[in-house]
Length: 538
Image (cartoon, rainbow, N blue to C red; front, side, top):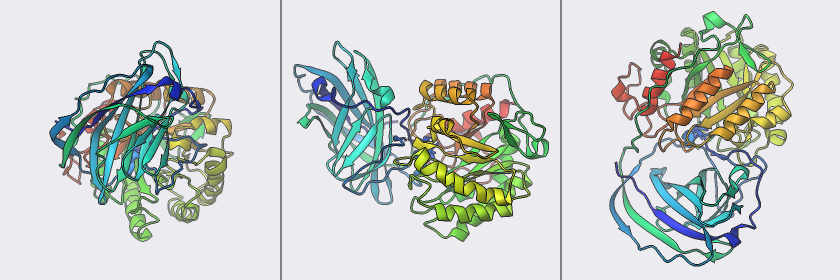
Protein backbone atom coordinates (compact mmCIF):
# COMPACT_ATOMS: atom_id res chain seq x y z
CA UNK A 1 0.00 0.00 0.00
CA UNK A 2 1.25 3.47 -0.77
CA UNK A 3 1.85 5.67 2.24
CA UNK A 4 2.33 9.39 2.60
CA UNK A 5 6.02 10.14 2.78
CA UNK A 6 8.43 13.00 2.53
CA UNK A 7 12.14 12.30 2.36
CA UNK A 8 14.75 14.90 3.12
CA UNK A 9 18.48 14.23 2.97
CA UNK A 10 20.54 16.67 4.96
CA UNK A 11 24.31 16.81 5.06
CA UNK A 12 25.56 18.04 8.39
CA UNK A 13 28.97 19.36 9.32
CA UNK A 14 30.67 17.41 12.06
CA UNK A 15 32.18 20.63 13.35
CA UNK A 16 28.72 21.91 14.10
CA UNK A 17 27.81 18.77 16.00
CA UNK A 18 30.84 17.80 18.04
CA UNK A 19 29.99 20.40 20.65
CA UNK A 20 26.72 18.65 21.52
CA UNK A 21 26.77 17.29 25.05
CA UNK A 22 26.37 13.53 25.47
CA UNK A 23 23.58 12.77 27.92
CA UNK A 24 23.46 9.70 30.14
CA UNK A 25 20.00 8.39 29.53
CA UNK A 26 19.06 4.83 28.80
CA UNK A 27 15.99 4.87 26.61
CA UNK A 28 13.86 7.22 24.65
CA UNK A 29 10.46 5.88 23.63
CA UNK A 30 6.61 6.31 23.68
CA UNK A 31 4.25 4.00 24.97
CA UNK A 32 1.83 2.81 24.55
CA UNK A 33 0.82 2.18 25.31
CA UNK A 34 0.83 2.30 24.53
CA UNK A 35 2.23 4.05 23.00
CA UNK A 36 4.61 2.44 24.27
CA UNK A 37 3.42 1.80 23.54
CA UNK A 38 5.57 2.13 23.53
CA UNK A 39 5.53 3.02 24.62
CA UNK A 40 7.34 2.44 28.03
CA UNK A 41 5.84 4.34 25.79
CA UNK A 42 2.80 0.14 25.35
CA UNK A 43 3.03 3.68 26.77
CA UNK A 44 1.28 3.08 25.77
CA UNK A 45 0.19 3.46 26.49
CA UNK A 46 1.80 3.97 24.57
CA UNK A 47 -0.19 6.27 22.93
CA UNK A 48 -2.25 5.49 21.49
CA UNK A 49 0.08 2.85 22.21
CA UNK A 50 3.61 1.88 23.36
CA UNK A 51 5.66 3.79 23.62
CA UNK A 52 8.09 7.53 23.52
CA UNK A 53 10.54 8.58 26.09
CA UNK A 54 12.40 11.48 27.56
CA UNK A 55 14.95 11.72 30.33
CA UNK A 56 13.52 11.71 33.82
CA UNK A 57 15.81 14.59 34.70
CA UNK A 58 14.92 16.97 31.88
CA UNK A 59 11.61 18.67 31.29
CA UNK A 60 10.47 19.30 27.73
CA UNK A 61 10.68 23.05 27.32
CA UNK A 62 8.67 25.11 24.88
CA UNK A 63 7.85 28.72 24.18
CA UNK A 64 4.67 27.55 22.52
CA UNK A 65 1.97 25.23 23.75
CA UNK A 66 3.66 21.83 23.82
CA UNK A 67 2.43 18.50 25.14
CA UNK A 68 4.12 15.12 25.24
CA UNK A 69 1.98 12.00 25.05
CA UNK A 70 2.41 8.31 24.30
CA UNK A 71 1.62 6.11 21.40
CA UNK A 72 -1.35 4.77 23.25
CA UNK A 73 -2.99 8.19 23.61
CA UNK A 74 -4.63 8.66 20.21
CA UNK A 75 -8.30 7.75 20.13
CA UNK A 76 -9.34 8.03 16.51
CA UNK A 77 -6.91 8.27 13.62
CA UNK A 78 -7.07 8.33 9.87
CA UNK A 79 -3.96 7.20 8.06
CA UNK A 80 -2.86 9.04 4.93
CA UNK A 81 -2.30 7.53 1.53
CA UNK A 82 -0.49 9.31 -1.28
CA UNK A 83 -1.97 10.05 -4.68
CA UNK A 84 0.78 12.10 -6.30
CA UNK A 85 4.48 12.64 -5.94
CA UNK A 86 6.85 15.44 -6.80
CA UNK A 87 10.55 15.38 -6.12
CA UNK A 88 13.46 17.74 -6.37
CA UNK A 89 16.95 16.98 -7.64
CA UNK A 90 19.61 16.29 -4.98
CA UNK A 91 21.90 19.21 -4.24
CA UNK A 92 25.65 18.92 -4.49
CA UNK A 93 27.47 17.74 -1.39
CA UNK A 94 29.53 20.59 0.10
CA UNK A 95 33.10 19.89 1.16
CA UNK A 96 33.66 19.01 4.80
CA UNK A 97 30.22 17.52 5.50
CA UNK A 98 30.42 14.45 7.74
CA UNK A 99 26.83 13.41 8.53
CA UNK A 100 23.83 12.76 6.32
CA UNK A 101 20.30 12.87 7.70
CA UNK A 102 17.24 11.38 6.03
CA UNK A 103 13.80 12.44 7.28
CA UNK A 104 10.78 10.39 6.26
CA UNK A 105 7.10 10.98 6.99
CA UNK A 106 5.63 7.46 6.93
CA UNK A 107 2.33 8.27 8.58
CA UNK A 108 -0.07 11.17 9.15
CA UNK A 109 -3.61 11.43 10.41
CA UNK A 110 -6.20 13.77 11.84
CA UNK A 111 -7.13 13.98 15.50
CA UNK A 112 -9.55 16.50 16.99
CA UNK A 113 -9.30 18.78 13.97
CA UNK A 114 -5.49 18.79 14.13
CA UNK A 115 -2.93 17.23 11.81
CA UNK A 116 -0.65 14.57 13.34
CA UNK A 117 2.62 13.78 11.58
CA UNK A 118 5.19 11.08 12.30
CA UNK A 119 8.75 11.93 11.24
CA UNK A 120 11.34 9.13 11.19
CA UNK A 121 14.98 10.20 11.00
CA UNK A 122 18.15 8.34 10.06
CA UNK A 123 21.48 9.98 10.87
CA UNK A 124 24.48 8.48 9.08
CA UNK A 125 28.18 9.20 9.56
CA UNK A 126 29.72 9.62 6.09
CA UNK A 127 33.13 10.72 7.37
CA UNK A 128 36.26 8.65 7.97
CA UNK A 129 36.19 9.09 11.77
CA UNK A 130 33.77 8.55 14.63
CA UNK A 131 31.46 11.38 15.66
CA UNK A 132 30.47 11.96 19.28
CA UNK A 133 27.29 13.96 19.87
CA UNK A 134 24.74 15.46 17.47
CA UNK A 135 21.98 18.07 17.43
CA UNK A 136 19.57 18.75 14.58
CA UNK A 137 17.24 21.76 14.52
CA UNK A 138 14.16 20.97 12.45
CA UNK A 139 12.03 23.95 11.35
CA UNK A 140 8.53 22.64 10.69
CA UNK A 141 7.00 25.87 9.39
CA UNK A 142 4.41 26.26 12.14
CA UNK A 143 3.97 25.89 15.87
CA UNK A 144 3.27 22.35 17.00
CA UNK A 145 2.74 20.04 19.94
CA UNK A 146 5.17 17.18 20.47
CA UNK A 147 3.05 14.09 20.90
CA UNK A 148 5.82 11.49 21.08
CA UNK A 149 9.54 11.06 20.51
CA UNK A 150 12.00 8.21 20.77
CA UNK A 151 15.78 7.72 20.72
CA UNK A 152 16.27 11.47 21.14
CA UNK A 153 15.76 14.36 23.50
CA UNK A 154 13.61 17.18 22.14
CA UNK A 155 13.34 20.86 22.91
CA UNK A 156 10.51 22.67 21.08
CA UNK A 157 10.82 26.40 20.48
CA UNK A 158 8.02 27.90 18.41
CA UNK A 159 8.29 26.44 14.93
CA UNK A 160 11.66 24.79 15.62
CA UNK A 161 12.15 21.34 17.11
CA UNK A 162 15.67 20.72 18.37
CA UNK A 163 16.58 17.02 18.54
CA UNK A 164 19.68 15.92 20.45
CA UNK A 165 21.30 12.53 21.04
CA UNK A 166 20.68 10.51 24.16
CA UNK A 167 23.43 8.66 25.99
CA UNK A 168 23.29 5.37 24.15
CA UNK A 169 23.23 6.83 20.60
CA UNK A 170 25.62 9.78 20.97
CA UNK A 171 28.44 7.92 19.22
CA UNK A 172 28.03 7.36 15.48
CA UNK A 173 30.97 5.35 14.11
CA UNK A 174 32.21 5.97 10.62
CA UNK A 175 29.78 4.50 8.07
CA UNK A 176 27.39 3.83 10.95
CA UNK A 177 23.93 5.26 11.54
CA UNK A 178 21.36 5.86 14.27
CA UNK A 179 17.62 6.40 14.08
CA UNK A 180 15.14 8.49 16.02
CA UNK A 181 11.61 9.73 15.57
CA UNK A 182 9.01 12.29 16.61
CA UNK A 183 5.28 12.71 16.25
CA UNK A 184 3.91 16.24 16.22
CA UNK A 185 0.45 17.77 16.11
CA UNK A 186 -0.14 21.01 14.18
CA UNK A 187 -2.98 23.13 12.83
CA UNK A 188 -2.26 22.17 9.21
CA UNK A 189 -0.17 19.52 7.44
CA UNK A 190 3.62 19.71 7.73
CA UNK A 191 4.65 20.42 4.14
CA UNK A 192 8.18 21.79 4.40
CA UNK A 193 10.93 20.89 6.84
CA UNK A 194 14.25 22.68 6.88
CA UNK A 195 17.18 21.63 9.02
CA UNK A 196 20.09 23.48 10.54
CA UNK A 197 22.92 22.93 12.97
CA UNK A 198 24.78 25.60 14.89
CA UNK A 199 22.60 28.27 13.29
CA UNK A 200 23.64 27.35 9.74
CA UNK A 201 21.06 26.17 7.22
CA UNK A 202 21.82 22.77 5.76
CA UNK A 203 21.38 21.73 2.11
CA UNK A 204 18.42 19.43 1.61
CA UNK A 205 16.89 17.01 -0.85
CA UNK A 206 13.13 16.65 -0.55
CA UNK A 207 10.46 14.42 -2.04
CA UNK A 208 6.92 15.72 -1.55
CA UNK A 209 3.66 13.76 -1.64
CA UNK A 210 0.10 14.95 -1.49
CA UNK A 211 -1.86 12.90 1.08
CA UNK A 212 -5.52 12.02 1.07
CA UNK A 213 -7.28 10.72 4.16
CA UNK A 214 -8.38 7.10 4.27
CA UNK A 215 -9.41 4.70 7.01
CA UNK A 216 -6.66 2.19 6.54
CA UNK A 217 -3.24 1.52 8.03
CA UNK A 218 0.18 0.44 6.84
CA UNK A 219 0.26 -3.27 6.11
CA UNK A 220 2.62 -5.25 8.31
CA UNK A 221 4.53 -8.38 7.32
CA UNK A 222 3.00 -11.68 8.33
CA UNK A 223 3.92 -12.81 11.81
CA UNK A 224 6.13 -15.89 12.00
CA UNK A 225 5.30 -18.88 14.11
CA UNK A 226 7.61 -18.89 17.14
CA UNK A 227 8.06 -22.11 19.06
CA UNK A 228 7.37 -21.30 22.72
CA UNK A 229 10.21 -22.00 25.15
CA UNK A 230 9.80 -24.37 28.05
CA UNK A 231 7.44 -22.94 30.64
CA UNK A 232 9.16 -21.87 33.87
CA UNK A 233 6.29 -21.04 36.22
CA UNK A 234 2.62 -21.72 36.84
CA UNK A 235 0.16 -20.24 34.43
CA UNK A 236 -3.25 -20.38 36.05
CA UNK A 237 -6.43 -18.67 37.05
CA UNK A 238 -7.39 -17.21 40.41
CA UNK A 239 -9.07 -20.39 41.64
CA UNK A 240 -5.75 -22.22 41.19
CA UNK A 241 -3.22 -19.58 42.22
CA UNK A 242 -5.18 -17.53 44.77
CA UNK A 243 -3.75 -14.41 46.36
CA UNK A 244 -0.48 -13.52 44.65
CA UNK A 245 2.50 -12.08 46.47
CA UNK A 246 6.10 -11.07 45.81
CA UNK A 247 9.01 -13.20 46.98
CA UNK A 248 12.38 -11.71 46.11
CA UNK A 249 12.17 -10.74 42.46
CA UNK A 250 9.38 -13.22 41.72
CA UNK A 251 5.61 -13.15 41.58
CA UNK A 252 4.35 -16.24 43.43
CA UNK A 253 1.03 -17.96 44.06
CA UNK A 254 -0.70 -18.78 47.35
CA UNK A 255 1.75 -21.65 47.92
CA UNK A 256 4.83 -19.56 47.26
CA UNK A 257 5.47 -21.09 43.83
CA UNK A 258 6.41 -18.87 40.86
CA UNK A 259 3.47 -17.83 38.72
CA UNK A 260 3.34 -15.91 35.46
CA UNK A 261 0.50 -13.71 34.28
CA UNK A 262 0.10 -13.27 30.53
CA UNK A 263 -2.66 -11.23 29.08
CA UNK A 264 -4.10 -8.29 27.21
CA UNK A 265 -4.53 -4.58 27.96
CA UNK A 266 -7.51 -2.59 26.79
CA UNK A 267 -6.93 0.64 24.99
CA UNK A 268 -8.29 3.73 26.75
CA UNK A 269 -11.68 2.63 28.04
CA UNK A 270 -13.09 6.11 27.42
CA UNK A 271 -12.50 5.55 23.69
CA UNK A 272 -13.03 1.80 23.32
CA UNK A 273 -15.43 0.79 26.11
CA UNK A 274 -17.30 -1.62 23.83
CA UNK A 275 -14.50 -4.20 24.10
CA UNK A 276 -14.33 -4.14 27.92
CA UNK A 277 -17.04 -6.71 28.55
CA UNK A 278 -17.55 -10.23 29.87
CA UNK A 279 -18.09 -11.84 26.47
CA UNK A 280 -14.78 -10.52 25.12
CA UNK A 281 -12.88 -11.46 28.28
CA UNK A 282 -14.34 -14.97 28.22
CA UNK A 283 -13.21 -15.45 24.63
CA UNK A 284 -9.71 -14.26 25.54
CA UNK A 285 -9.63 -16.65 28.49
CA UNK A 286 -10.98 -19.70 26.65
CA UNK A 287 -9.46 -19.25 23.18
CA UNK A 288 -6.31 -17.21 23.82
CA UNK A 289 -5.32 -18.73 27.18
CA UNK A 290 -5.25 -15.31 28.85
CA UNK A 291 -5.25 -15.15 32.66
CA UNK A 292 -5.06 -11.36 33.22
CA UNK A 293 -6.80 -8.32 31.77
CA UNK A 294 -5.46 -4.79 32.19
CA UNK A 295 -7.99 -1.92 32.22
CA UNK A 296 -6.34 1.26 30.91
CA UNK A 297 -8.15 4.22 32.45
CA UNK A 298 -6.54 7.42 31.18
CA UNK A 299 -6.39 10.14 33.78
CA UNK A 300 -6.31 12.95 31.20
CA UNK A 301 -6.06 13.14 27.39
CA UNK A 302 -9.11 15.42 27.17
CA UNK A 303 -11.58 12.60 27.69
CA UNK A 304 -10.03 10.79 30.64
CA UNK A 305 -11.09 10.18 34.19
CA UNK A 306 -10.39 13.69 35.45
CA UNK A 307 -11.70 15.36 32.26
CA UNK A 308 -15.00 13.50 32.04
CA UNK A 309 -17.79 12.29 34.26
CA UNK A 310 -16.04 10.24 36.92
CA UNK A 311 -19.11 8.17 37.65
CA UNK A 312 -19.41 6.98 34.06
CA UNK A 313 -15.79 5.90 33.74
CA UNK A 314 -15.79 4.33 37.20
CA UNK A 315 -18.82 2.28 36.21
CA UNK A 316 -17.02 1.03 33.10
CA UNK A 317 -14.05 0.01 35.27
CA UNK A 318 -16.22 -1.66 37.90
CA UNK A 319 -18.28 -3.57 35.36
CA UNK A 320 -15.08 -4.83 33.74
CA UNK A 321 -13.55 -5.80 37.10
CA UNK A 322 -16.73 -7.61 38.09
CA UNK A 323 -16.67 -9.51 34.78
CA UNK A 324 -13.06 -10.59 35.38
CA UNK A 325 -13.92 -11.78 38.89
CA UNK A 326 -16.81 -13.85 37.52
CA UNK A 327 -14.47 -15.33 34.91
CA UNK A 328 -11.76 -16.27 37.45
CA UNK A 329 -9.29 -13.84 35.84
CA UNK A 330 -6.76 -11.53 37.39
CA UNK A 331 -7.42 -7.89 36.54
CA UNK A 332 -5.17 -4.83 36.68
CA UNK A 333 -6.80 -1.46 37.42
CA UNK A 334 -4.47 0.93 35.61
CA UNK A 335 -4.32 4.62 36.62
CA UNK A 336 -3.06 5.59 33.17
CA UNK A 337 -0.79 8.58 33.81
CA UNK A 338 0.50 9.83 30.48
CA UNK A 339 -0.19 13.39 29.26
CA UNK A 340 0.13 14.72 32.80
CA UNK A 341 3.72 13.32 32.91
CA UNK A 342 3.98 13.28 36.72
CA UNK A 343 1.55 11.29 38.91
CA UNK A 344 1.68 14.22 41.33
CA UNK A 345 -0.51 16.27 38.96
CA UNK A 346 -3.70 14.33 39.74
CA UNK A 347 -2.68 12.84 43.07
CA UNK A 348 -5.82 13.96 44.93
CA UNK A 349 -8.02 12.15 42.40
CA UNK A 350 -5.78 9.09 42.59
CA UNK A 351 -6.01 8.92 46.37
CA UNK A 352 -9.81 9.09 46.24
CA UNK A 353 -10.05 6.57 43.40
CA UNK A 354 -7.80 3.94 44.96
CA UNK A 355 -9.34 4.36 48.40
CA UNK A 356 -12.73 3.60 46.86
CA UNK A 357 -11.59 0.72 44.63
CA UNK A 358 -9.44 -0.98 47.27
CA UNK A 359 -12.34 -0.90 49.73
CA UNK A 360 -14.77 -2.29 47.14
CA UNK A 361 -12.50 -5.14 46.05
CA UNK A 362 -10.59 -5.82 49.26
CA UNK A 363 -11.83 -9.41 49.48
CA UNK A 364 -11.02 -10.33 45.89
CA UNK A 365 -7.52 -11.71 45.16
CA UNK A 366 -8.19 -11.05 41.46
CA UNK A 367 -7.48 -7.33 41.68
CA UNK A 368 -4.05 -5.77 41.06
CA UNK A 369 -3.49 -2.01 41.31
CA UNK A 370 -1.24 -0.18 38.83
CA UNK A 371 -0.98 3.25 40.38
CA UNK A 372 0.80 5.20 37.61
CA UNK A 373 1.17 3.99 34.05
CA UNK A 374 4.05 5.88 32.40
CA UNK A 375 5.65 8.81 34.21
CA UNK A 376 7.52 10.81 31.60
CA UNK A 377 8.97 14.20 30.73
CA UNK A 378 10.21 15.98 33.82
CA UNK A 379 8.89 13.32 36.23
CA UNK A 380 11.73 11.77 38.25
CA UNK A 381 11.75 8.75 40.55
CA UNK A 382 12.94 10.52 43.70
CA UNK A 383 11.09 13.79 43.13
CA UNK A 384 7.74 12.60 41.76
CA UNK A 385 7.01 8.89 41.49
CA UNK A 386 8.42 7.51 44.72
CA UNK A 387 6.82 10.13 47.02
CA UNK A 388 3.53 9.68 45.14
CA UNK A 389 3.66 5.91 45.68
CA UNK A 390 4.49 6.45 49.36
CA UNK A 391 1.15 8.24 49.73
CA UNK A 392 -1.05 6.05 47.53
CA UNK A 393 0.10 2.60 48.65
CA UNK A 394 -0.84 3.14 52.33
CA UNK A 395 -4.34 4.15 51.20
CA UNK A 396 -4.68 0.83 49.36
CA UNK A 397 -3.06 -1.15 52.17
CA UNK A 398 -5.53 0.24 54.71
CA UNK A 399 -8.30 -1.63 52.88
CA UNK A 400 -6.46 -4.39 51.03
CA UNK A 401 -3.23 -5.28 52.85
CA UNK A 402 -2.24 -8.21 50.60
CA UNK A 403 -2.82 -7.00 47.05
CA UNK A 404 -0.14 -6.60 44.39
CA UNK A 405 0.67 -2.97 43.56
CA UNK A 406 2.50 -2.09 40.34
CA UNK A 407 4.39 1.21 40.27
CA UNK A 408 5.37 2.89 37.01
CA UNK A 409 8.91 4.15 36.50
CA UNK A 410 10.20 7.29 34.75
CA UNK A 411 10.81 7.62 31.02
CA UNK A 412 7.62 5.86 30.02
CA UNK A 413 8.26 3.04 32.53
CA UNK A 414 11.70 2.18 31.27
CA UNK A 415 13.84 3.49 34.14
CA UNK A 416 13.48 0.46 36.40
CA UNK A 417 17.12 0.99 37.36
CA UNK A 418 16.05 4.11 39.27
CA UNK A 419 13.71 1.96 41.37
CA UNK A 420 16.48 -0.60 41.92
CA UNK A 421 18.71 2.14 43.32
CA UNK A 422 15.98 3.37 45.69
CA UNK A 423 13.13 0.86 46.10
CA UNK A 424 9.91 1.42 47.99
CA UNK A 425 9.62 0.08 51.51
CA UNK A 426 6.42 -1.95 51.05
CA UNK A 427 5.71 -5.64 50.58
CA UNK A 428 4.08 -7.00 47.42
CA UNK A 429 5.17 -4.10 45.21
CA UNK A 430 6.35 -4.60 41.61
CA UNK A 431 7.86 -2.10 39.20
CA UNK A 432 6.52 -1.52 35.68
CA UNK A 433 8.66 -1.98 32.59
CA UNK A 434 7.11 -1.07 29.22
CA UNK A 435 8.69 -1.80 25.86
CA UNK A 436 7.92 -1.77 22.14
CA UNK A 437 9.98 -4.38 20.35
CA UNK A 438 10.82 -2.41 17.19
CA UNK A 439 12.25 0.44 19.30
CA UNK A 440 13.51 -1.10 22.56
CA UNK A 441 16.19 -3.68 22.02
CA UNK A 442 19.24 -5.13 23.77
CA UNK A 443 19.96 -2.11 25.96
CA UNK A 444 16.56 -2.35 27.68
CA UNK A 445 16.68 -6.14 27.90
CA UNK A 446 20.08 -5.82 29.56
CA UNK A 447 18.58 -3.39 32.05
CA UNK A 448 15.82 -5.87 32.84
CA UNK A 449 18.31 -8.69 33.38
CA UNK A 450 20.44 -6.53 35.68
CA UNK A 451 17.49 -5.37 37.76
CA UNK A 452 16.00 -8.85 38.08
CA UNK A 453 19.32 -10.44 39.03
CA UNK A 454 19.65 -7.81 41.77
CA UNK A 455 16.27 -8.70 43.25
CA UNK A 456 13.91 -6.12 41.71
CA UNK A 457 10.41 -7.53 41.03
CA UNK A 458 9.43 -6.34 37.53
CA UNK A 459 6.05 -6.60 35.81
CA UNK A 460 5.82 -5.84 32.06
CA UNK A 461 2.35 -4.32 32.29
CA UNK A 462 2.43 -3.02 28.70
CA UNK A 463 4.34 -4.04 25.58
CA UNK A 464 3.97 -3.94 21.82
CA UNK A 465 5.62 -5.78 18.96
CA UNK A 466 5.73 -2.65 16.77
CA UNK A 467 7.59 0.62 17.33
CA UNK A 468 7.09 2.98 20.21
CA UNK A 469 4.59 5.12 18.33
CA UNK A 470 2.19 2.17 18.33
CA UNK A 471 2.51 1.97 14.58
CA UNK A 472 5.07 1.08 11.95
CA UNK A 473 5.96 -2.53 11.28
CA UNK A 474 6.17 -5.26 13.89
CA UNK A 475 9.67 -6.56 14.56
CA UNK A 476 9.20 -10.27 15.13
CA UNK A 477 12.91 -10.98 15.67
CA UNK A 478 13.04 -8.51 18.55
CA UNK A 479 9.67 -9.77 19.82
CA UNK A 480 11.08 -13.28 20.03
CA UNK A 481 14.07 -12.08 22.05
CA UNK A 482 11.75 -10.32 24.50
CA UNK A 483 9.52 -13.37 24.96
CA UNK A 484 12.49 -15.66 25.47
CA UNK A 485 13.92 -13.35 28.11
CA UNK A 486 10.66 -12.77 29.99
CA UNK A 487 9.84 -16.47 30.04
CA UNK A 488 13.34 -17.38 31.19
CA UNK A 489 12.90 -15.01 34.14
CA UNK A 490 9.21 -15.90 34.65
CA UNK A 491 8.20 -12.25 34.24
CA UNK A 492 4.54 -11.46 33.64
CA UNK A 493 3.54 -9.49 30.55
CA UNK A 494 0.48 -7.78 29.03
CA UNK A 495 0.09 -6.87 25.36
CA UNK A 496 -1.23 -3.51 24.07
CA UNK A 497 -4.01 -3.24 22.89
CA UNK A 498 -7.57 -4.58 22.85
CA UNK A 499 -9.01 -2.17 20.29
CA UNK A 500 -9.99 -1.94 16.63
CA UNK A 501 -8.01 1.22 16.01
CA UNK A 502 -6.24 1.29 12.63
CA UNK A 503 -2.69 0.89 13.90
CA UNK A 504 -0.09 -1.84 14.22
CA UNK A 505 -0.42 -2.25 17.99
CA UNK A 506 -4.13 -3.08 17.87
CA UNK A 507 -5.25 -6.69 18.11
CA UNK A 508 -8.38 -6.12 16.05
CA UNK A 509 -9.12 -4.67 12.64
CA UNK A 510 -11.58 -1.76 12.39
CA UNK A 511 -15.15 -3.00 12.73
CA UNK A 512 -14.27 -6.24 14.57
CA UNK A 513 -16.95 -7.76 16.77
CA UNK A 514 -17.34 -6.29 20.26
CA UNK A 515 -18.42 -9.65 21.68
CA UNK A 516 -15.34 -11.74 20.91
CA UNK A 517 -15.36 -14.90 18.84
CA UNK A 518 -13.16 -13.23 16.23
CA UNK A 519 -12.18 -14.96 13.02
CA UNK A 520 -8.64 -14.51 11.75
CA UNK A 521 -10.02 -12.03 9.22
CA UNK A 522 -10.93 -9.74 12.13
CA UNK A 523 -7.45 -9.90 13.66
CA UNK A 524 -4.46 -7.74 12.79
CA UNK A 525 -1.04 -9.34 12.31
CA UNK A 526 -0.37 -8.50 15.96
CA UNK A 527 -3.69 -10.10 16.92
CA UNK A 528 -2.94 -13.31 15.02
CA UNK A 529 0.53 -13.50 16.52
CA UNK A 530 -0.58 -12.89 20.10
CA UNK A 531 -3.49 -15.34 19.84
CA UNK A 532 -1.13 -18.05 18.61
CA UNK A 533 1.54 -17.26 21.16
CA UNK A 534 -0.75 -17.13 24.19
CA UNK A 535 -2.92 -20.07 23.16
CA UNK A 536 -0.04 -22.43 22.38
CA UNK A 537 2.09 -21.35 25.33
CA UNK A 538 0.64 -23.67 27.96
